[in-house]
Length: 375
Ligand code: OSB
Ligand code: MG
Image (cartoon, rainbow, N blue to C red; front, side, top):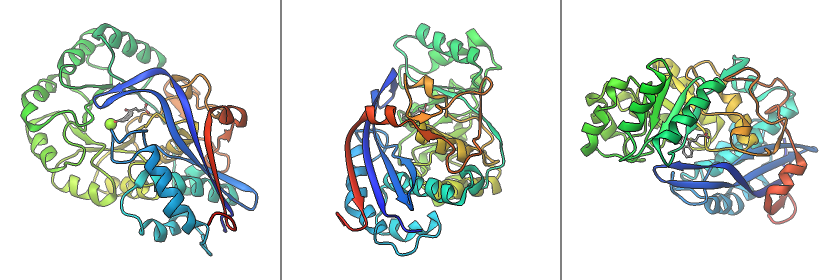
């Protein structure tokens, strides 16, 4: 396969409801869609970086820079690209910048599968025909508003309720949820690195609430303190930000820093690495689930495909499109086919088409790179 053209579209999609985490508030999604074309067939991938490096080191601008200056010129010179895994030779030339790599790799996976006529789920070794999904609820202005949201999500059938916490908005809201909705709701908290080991007494107060897990309580680049913390808590720790590769996963598991891993395709550099982490965790009896980065339908479709692998045994954050957008950019949009359940598409590639009109309405800038020009 020869990639003849790569296109970068920068999109701005307003969120229906602002999303607040311990690191800040997002009102819209500003991100990059990568399109890769070969023999008239195009595959699509999405970058999950945010406009500013609040979640990890990458940003929309660094993604554009790395793709334009370093990765795309090399991809357009490749003589042989038989499989998306062949991109590793190029990716090795750039340290880090995993979200940039994942966006390009995602487009190539979709293209590769479309050319072969197989679904991305099948190509990755997925076995599930449908996936259970949960919801991630941002920090709400008041506990009452949070309870309303949680109640509405339970009614919609979500299989896991995740709530963002931060210092000053943690034990009380989680207790209020348990009091209102009971101990049987599959409930977890995500701290996005807002605590340190000094806060162990606060975090211990969550133990009686029997949460499924607490996600990334400590620093985004730590695994050591998480291992210390896990010895103090009965609530399982799940790492998100700290895991970038299967090697990170191995080290974190070996030292007892994590009992569950949130796999985000962008954060780990693409589907190939995501699958490696899945396989390693399966061999160690560590369950995984697929996190979200407020993706458009394109990123969501990739998440659905990877979630179809068997060790994604905990519901992920891949909620339907209409939770985020008035109009998503795929056709069809991502929807429940029954409450809390999304069907894994069987069509070639990601199995979702592009809604060209909606897509173009959100585009703010386009760069096109071809094999003969701009290289
Ligand atoms: O930590 O999982 C996270 C959103 C932005 C940044 C980080 C995270 C999140 C979410 C949202 O939890 C998940 C989603 O609904 O896409
Ligand atoms: Mg998280």
